[in-house]
Amino acid sequence: MGTNVVIQMDEIHVKSTFTYKGGKIIGSSLNPTDPAKTVFAFMISSLSKRWSSIVRLLPCSSSSAEVLFPIIKDVIRDVEACGLSVHVLCTDNYPMNVNIFKLFSPSRLLEHIVPHPMDSNRPLFLLFDFVHIIKSIHFENIQVASTAVFEEIRKLYKSDQHSVAKLAPRLNSKACWPSTLERQNVSLALRIFDESTAAALNVSYQSRYHTSTNSQTTDFITIICNVRKLFNINTPNKGILHKDEFSVPLTYNDTRFMFLQCVVDWAECWRVMPDKRGKLSPQTFTSFRHSCIALPCIVNHLTGNCGYSYVLSSFLQNDPLEHHFDLYRMMSGAQCHISYCQVLETERRIKLSSILKLFSKKPVEDSISLKNFLESCSSSCGQDSHASFSLEMYLSAIQGYSGIELNKQILQSLSFIAGYSVYAYYKHSTKCQSCLLFLTKNKEMEIEEPSGSEYRLIQIIDRGSLKWPSSDVIDAIITLWKVFSSIESQPSIFNNFITGPSRSILIQLTTSLIEDEQAEVWRVMCDECGTLMWDVLAKLLTATSNCLISNKIKNMNSQLPLKPCVENTRKLKKLKAN
Image 1: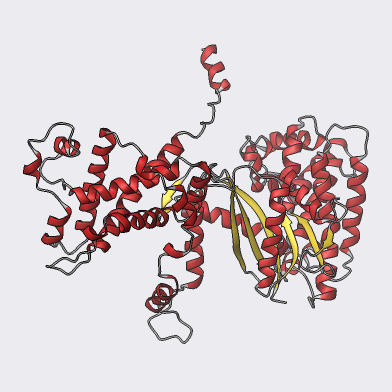
Image 2: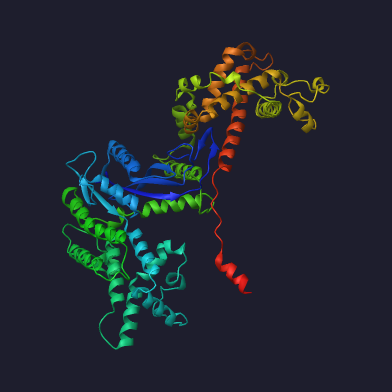
């Protein structure tokens, strides 16, 4: 039973920006030249215990059901290849996700049971996250101001807001009059769809009209609350502790499934009513009905065919994935709008923290030594991925690199960058003076040269501590710049360049050209410290590559379209009135 999992899907909005880090360009979407606007996250969660893990993060700028459908099938195949069994696919009721669910069906209609992509004899259950459905119901009832639901709730809050002994303690102003952003807040929606709110409405209605019957608003909130309880069973003893039959774990052919069937019939009657006022959107109606039908089928399958004695329905929902998104934001400095690079870095920290745990100083058999763990990682994957890609495509693309023109301004800039690369190497080296003499030039010899010299920029800025690179170092940096310019001028090649290990590609291409043209210059060894100058060249090229690629990323980010500023009409009207 421990191998049975559910795949949960959702997206998180990220900053549309590129980031250069670790020798790679991060932030591109499926189209390499477009920055990612959202990240689709795929998480697997166990159906029998509290365990979940992200299995894939997919950056996208714009996507469709046809693009994501094969990717989801690949995720299911990879999870099944690890020995796990996927039974349920859960996501929100966004229109694109509805279209994805339709593609799983042979009839291309929305169904709650479809043939499994890995085995047509097995069922795959499709489920919508009920928390998102509650948010949709809350949002759509607010949009229609004339709905009886919110009119009664707001009247109840107004009559109760100044009272010390409140009839509806869960209600507040934000729940009754939420802003556009607060309408996406689940906690505010649950303040409306709460037992205490339904009870307060019932008492208020009966005292106002002197009747013993319930109001329609009370019945509506009670129905939504009971359905939510059936989708939010998270512990075996919840029903016993709360003394609530709707919170007891679900079993085979549970009697509460009759209630869900009645809810489906009620929703269908509501949908076909001729009066459109106060009704939910067709999309919300469809997802609500679909989830109420799918839940009993999932429970009967797990208890009848997979050996479960009961099912905790909250394990089917997207709550672990939403909690993961909260961790991304909190671990990135409590930012609401983070970048794709921050998402990746946070996910790596979460994965690492799940492996490394703190133990006491007393010896424990199953404890992990951090030193041994790092050594095993360095031995298995410590090699830089320079050889994990093919250079044939790039070698043919840079054949005409020598014909690229180099003006005086670029030459002086490259000389300055070459001096920085020498400084960066010398700062972290053994401070060998012989190596420094090989890499630099005597400043006094360049003082009398004309203003067009490649050292002119350094000469103007220098106050005595800048490194003046030798002509061999400048020639190597110029070769690197020409290679980068050749790649940049060809869009198809550049698209592959930014999706791969960019720095490694650039360094290998440059060293292969220098090997043919200047090998005798760099294939020497320092007499004083024994350092091979070819290894020093790789470090110089690394520092220069970081500089060039980083500047290119800044240029790409500066060319991204800015969002138009929305005029704050409320403040403008207030200022005009004054």
